[in-house]
Image 1 (cartoon, rainbow, N blue to C red):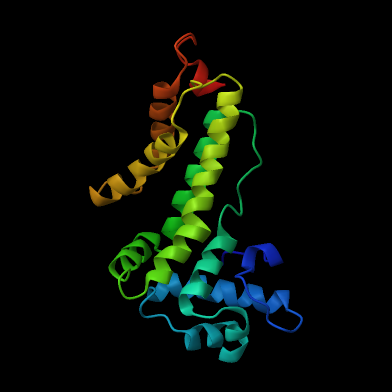
Image 2 (cartoon, helix red, strand yellow):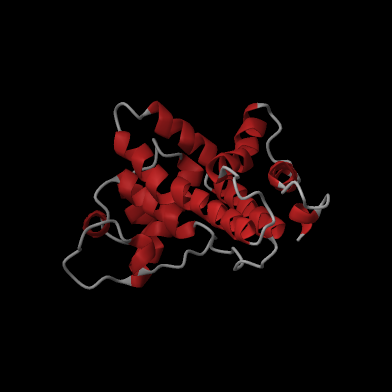
Length: 213
């Protein structure tokens, strides 16, 4: 079972429970939510199921998270980049590590099905997509952008590089491969990083410099 490190920062969702929080209960609830997401899917999972699996009352969950969307996206945020190493100074290695963690997280929680649900329910449950974007999508993009910024400051990619476009180019192959029936290729992250870094290489850099240092 995947372990979730719980802290006030990781599970904060903009409200006060009005009483001391139990870290053990937080962790049990968040873990149960992720397990049920993977086994039941977002639509079928219920807060009653989460409460039973976590060994808490439903009211205990509501003291912490207002809705199922609130709970689920908080659980995804807490699980994000749990095993990611600190920046190594090697832009290629850092980008690959972030992308590998991204794909592992998506696969662990049936994330593509969740993304489909978020898009399908956007009209009726707009907060689900909004919370997913705020708590998982944008922080992941920020990690990638920060790695690229470090590389730009070190002169390893062009000073005029569009980093937001580069971030989209790094993440895009994962979704494109899935839709094309090519998902799960272990080499996808390396290939995406090498393609993007090749396109961002400074004109004066020797071939391979940006991709391997």
